[in-house]
Length: 325
Image (cartoon, rainbow, N blue to C red; front, side, top):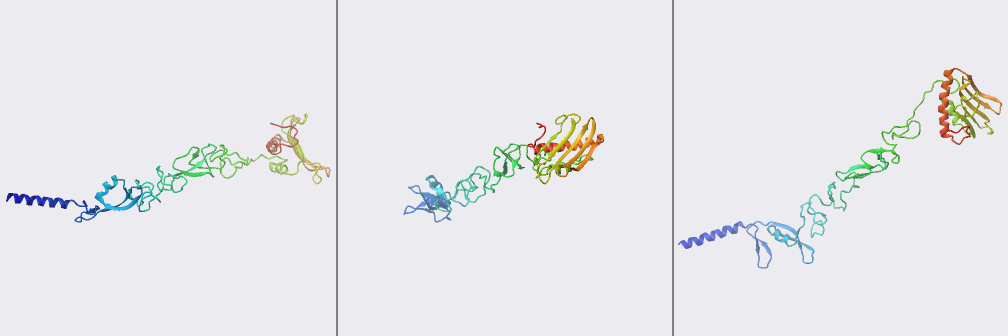
């Protein structure tokens, strides 16, 4: 009787152990792996490596995966991002890193040192949609301001590039936003869009204004002329303290005249004048001035001095009485 009870207990234990083996692999008579039909099946799709090195799709029981992987088989989508590894036996077969779920075709490229979207380019700064990339601009002249016309996105700031923009002349380090602009030189040093204009308000001169002199200055043609703005440069005493401009277009058939302006002192006395002598008529078309007050002579001299500086810059080839460095 005791032996019978022992046998029955042993059979019961064997039944319980069999029930606990859910998903167990059993060998069928034809040698294929099968799931124990007494438990709900759990399968996985893998790429089975064939002897020639290629892969073929295969569905195997989940609990058989370790054995297959150890023999060289691969998961079709190891990182579960929906894309199979390159050369996989099923799926898209174009995941360039099947161990990283953030890497797959069409993923957002980010600045992380990986080719996230599998386009063959890591971090791709030229891709304007690279997440984390910033705009930088070339600073060819090294003034700390980037060129308006040369910019790109990079994950790291390249040497010789800066993050700010606005340099309107990247070949001149003195020209950039915030630079001091020099008025009236036709150069936009501060990249504001135009040169600053400094308008000088001159004190009154009884014989001429800066505007009148500039109208003569822009008159063409002037084939030759001379001027003096230092004592004793062209004339002897008593004119050695007189600043003067004298220009002529004598020889031009239609306009045959001299134009002259003076300011300073003659024999120590204040003097200012303007004269335009017409050689065709033998008369003065304009004649103003002579000895005057010290204040008027000083005002006229200030205007004439600035006018002469303009002439120096724009008419260096004229037949000047004295050339200045």
